[in-house]
Length: 127
Image (cartoon, rainbow, N blue to C red; front, side, top):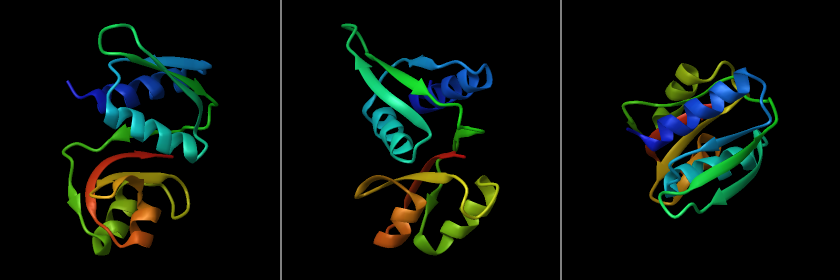
């Protein structure tokens, strides 16, 4: 059970059904950071954490802008010099979508990782 895979599959399924919101459970720190990054890029709307006394949940408002969002498994390690290879593999075109990485400076997208010249571990992609 991978919470990030479950979260992104839930978002994809709800987007395909054209629903306005989804509930993601269990809530984890990594899932929260990835959701905030996706929210910053404009793919999803408001994100609300719901404390249910157990593991927590996220309520995510959907706009219908996501064509595909999936987790990368296995989580490959990458350098800045290899970033374009992963962009070509996971994204449909050059300026469409984001590849999400976990770096030693936090969770960020591939553009920000290139700017900061830092590599990391591939987590997911969204377009």
